[in-house]
Length: 419
Image 1 (spheres, rainbow, N blue to C red):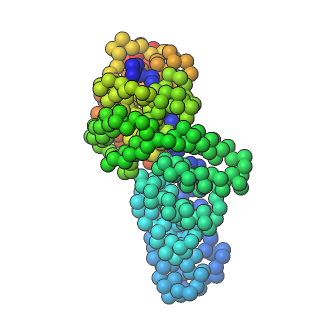
Image 2: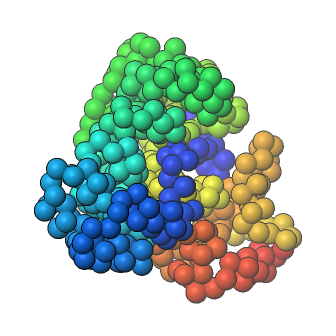
Image 3: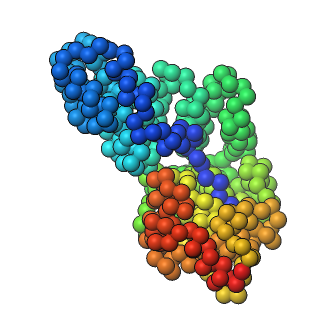
């Protein structure tokens, strides 16, 4: 397949859902949560009074220790178990906001020892597992949460997780339950329509599992898939070495005929690859040449790695710029940019439906990414991705990593590009 390198790949990252965003918008210790124990239970004894004071001050380690000690002395009291559960929930949420998901998960699990079926703690444990890059560990607590409390956003998150794992029946079960409760839920309806399109097209596909990938393809095309699988494994090594990161779970790749690809993805006709939680390629009956296939696969796998490393929060200009850089595309030395260039404008340019304008966006995205690599190496770009994954804005991440305000960087880029 002939490739222009700059334009033919699109990336639509899977976002874990509304739940993930809500954690960052909450105050460090919500006032109603701090007062929970005091307003629902009468104070009984100095130990509990001391625990309440620590809890209200946000000193969760000491508070949880005291609540746990009191609960151990009153094992049959549901009140004490509530105290312990709420304290570890608040502590875990505070730790999660500090971008320490592994510690947060341990704290939520500690709270679940007191209240094993508490839906708030179960949701929290699932979210912490996703933040920690272990979505498979999120499934069990989130499933238990829906059994206790039918939360539509938890069901949507589970449907997305199962869809990404190619467990279609489970994804559909959650979407069906969600839409039975809220028939007008737009995001659930869109996901349902996407999954149903995939099922129609992929009904007769074969499925192969390798060390790092799940590959789905037409049953008749088994032998032709071998070069793709080999290229995928090489991409896993190459991109992993460059970014010092490997996804924790297998990545799914689906190989289509050209018409099938566009039926499923509904993308622009010029797009020849997509990452939306799965890598999708329209390879048709023939494969690209060796070098072209290698570039195509590296580019798409790079999208998957970038997405996971940043937890789906990388802006598209950086996704596309870095994917091109990792596949080996280099900047046209004669490139000139438009006046008034900003990253916001670049983001819009990349998504322009006009292929010529989109090409300019891809070229500039590569140029900006190459400049960032020149300033601090791929290690610095990786740090930007990690900071984005931890919740920083692109402006905050750039300032922290490169020591300059984003406006200063944009001004330098405009001057260098002749804008």
